[in-house]
Amino acid sequence: MGDEVKIKGFQNLRRGCYPMLTLVMAETALETLPPEIWRRRDISRQLAEKKLKPEDILLDRSYHHKAMLHLKDAERRGRPDIAHFSTLEATASPLYLKGLLKFYLHTYTNKVIELADNVRLPKTYARFEGLIIKLFAEKKVPETGTTLMQLTEENLSELITRLKPSKVIGLSKLGEKNNFRDVASLLSLEEKPLLVVGGFPKGPFSSQVREALDEVYSVCDMSLEAHVVVARILYEYERCISLPC
View 1 (cartoon, rainbow, N blue to C red):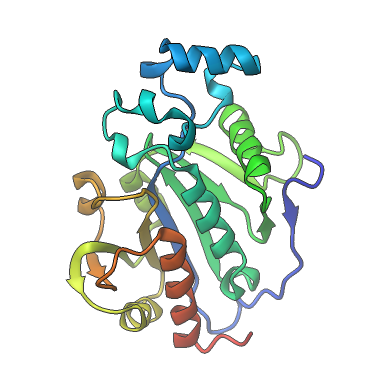
View 2 (view 1 turned 90 degrees about the horizontal axis):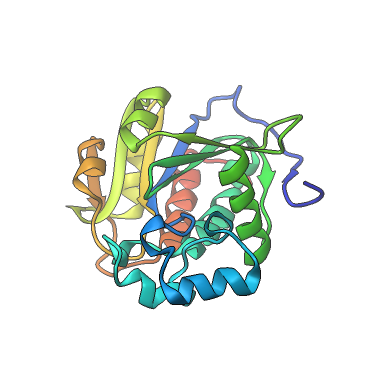
């Protein structure tokens, strides 16, 4: 993998009094080109020009807008940049750097990407895209040695069952009115808190995801981008547990 994914040095505080927070980006708009649009002329042309297969390209509304008009849930798909920005925010936080945050990407197609502790992802989108495509193909990165990222096929409910959190809290515009500070305080009181943030551009959680959540809160009157929500809730959580920076 060269320098595509790196391990950061960090101070591990897990043995102290700090709880471990798990953050899941749910239904993230991150997938390769779906079979429903492979035969479209614009898609075929792109594949031919770049000499690539459909599984070598991430679905991206910036390039595939016309083709996506024919997809189910088109408004919730084709935004891999959301995963990129949100992952960079989460893995740059003091909480993650000090070994107190587990981070997962659950995708629209029910794949789960798990990051190992203290992984540094590419900051440029092109390299991030290449890394994700490689992960989708090989199921783990790197193929040998210490696994830094791995991919499993499971829905959100299955992931939650596997992780066994003490409480699952989701953030959504359709949730009960609250604020970042108070939601962070609720999380900090749990032994194994799990926070779910949507990884899609618009709309509420699907019914399947909503049913997997214990509580859902709306923390802002405005519609905030996912990476902003991630940055603000992690900051407030760090304040609640008095995490030294």
